[in-house]
Length: 127
Image (cartoon, rainbow, N blue to C red; front, side, top):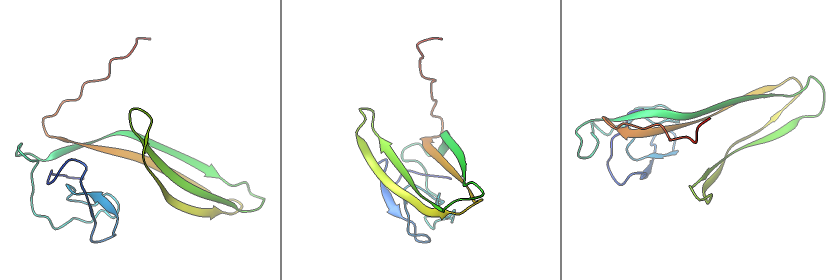
């Protein structure tokens, strides 16, 4: 996804196609992947587009046994700050699984940085 700063970092708006809340700076919706009519924008002050990296991606699969009563599930995402305070919490999906059903769930986090930004690896305690 290409982004460009328009307001304060983290400002949001509603995608006109799928009505999901997305970053104001997005030129492509991460949910429905529609291109948004915002013209060609650039990162404030830099003259370049933001670069996206995905520092976190988790995928897992659950499978209902071939016999037994249906299972129900809720997919919940929670975001916490550095001190552990909950910033946001959302149920992003619910459903049911019947005998033999399988569901794969994926969580990914994209981070957008102005072009030319370098990220240093965290300093570890050794190993």
